[in-house]
Image (cartoon, rainbow, N blue to C red; front, side):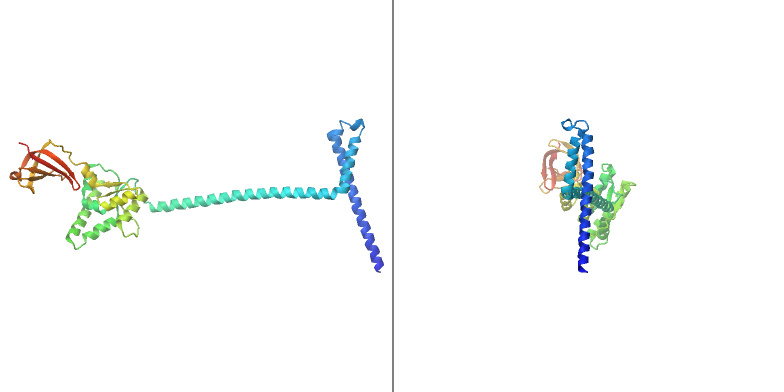
Length: 328
């Protein structure tokens, strides 16, 4: 029984070897014929080797036959490996390029989404009713009251904005038990009412900041930066803070100093002497802008209008002082 199995195994192996050999011969013959026809078509069909017909084709065919017969498996494996490498590298490049494009698109979409979100958030912070270049009034400017005259003269035709916390601060001052603070608060509210009338429709706006900041000055600076507005103030500290923040400041005190009457020594004018001066025989008068004139040898004419002649103009930290004498 064992010998029969061994015999069958040997027969099977012989048949397998025969089939492989026959298959190798067939493939070698096919590639030999392919070499024959290719060489004839490309070259030897026109130029015979040594002028002998089919000699070149036969040699090429024999070479192809022998190569496939003896090295066919190695050649096929080499070609297969080369093709596998070529296809693999090509697919890898295609996948890398695909993911690069997709990642760039993803990054761009995220960036656009962030930009859109930022614009939406900024648009929420900026009140659409605020006109660029608007003038924001602080508490000190409203109480001072001179801004009303500037608006009435038409020199300031920008939108006037008052924040709700400034109005609340004026209301709080008006409710104080302290007489001076109560008067300032009431005067500020009255000035605010007159400013609304002077501005007319569309140029006066009360903005609700929705800001939890307790400091009114800080909220005003933040509001002006967001809305690209200017700020009007007579408060020294707020003036400096706003300038540091890059906000344009309209200083009413500076404006008042710039438009004061420009007097030079030798100029004459008629003024009313209102009171005696500190020094003997001096009298004091005031110009319309509040500038003080000290007139020598004029104490006897207090309460009367007299023509004076400017002798000297002094610029001090407190403002200008003009010294004059009676023009006789």
